[in-house]
Amino acid sequence: MAAQSYSKAGQIMYALNGNWAQGFAYDLHTLKSEYMGRNEHGHDSFNTTRTEMGELVYSLKYCNDISAISKIVNLINKATRLDCIDIIIPIPPSNKNRRIQPVQAIANALGESNSIAVSADILHKKQGGKEIKSISSHSERQASLKETMSINHYHNIQGKVVLLIDDLYCSGSTLSYATELLIEAGASQVNVLTMTKTRSKR
View (cartoon, rainbow, N blue to C red):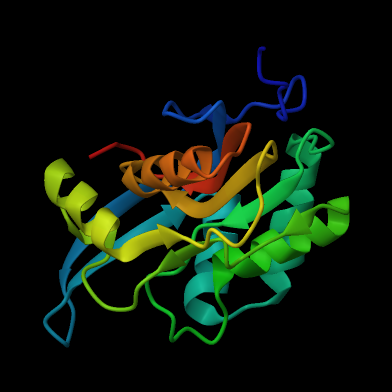
């Protein structure tokens, strides 16, 4: 059976290909990034121009701007129809020390606005280890994910249509492995939605 599209007709989003039924990124994360040299602390400095969604995600993630949540959800609701979704599952964070977990916060608000159940504890990620985006090798990313990410089997997702959410699509490794776990646990269909994507795929 063909997957029922959750992208609204006429809305341009970036298609994401993977082992999921359908995948979309709302927009690119950045439009351009100009290298400005080293700053006073000896770190590389960039002059970055972000998309509207990219700026909202950045403000939420790095500036703890909670007002960005409703703006993000409003943009997503204008672009998607979620009546075919049974449950929303956010990708678990690598950094659990953030005061605000952006992906979980977006998932909760999106679920509330569409009366869809949200579960942040179906997927579990161990604390520690490298962030996947910092690992360049595909095989190393897969090995790291198998060591750190698991599924809580006490949840019953048998036959459920899942929307898997993340803030940024880069290589797709995390989303791909999470999809594999959810399908093995009995989900009938896994769809993917990210707020943004990088301009190139590693």
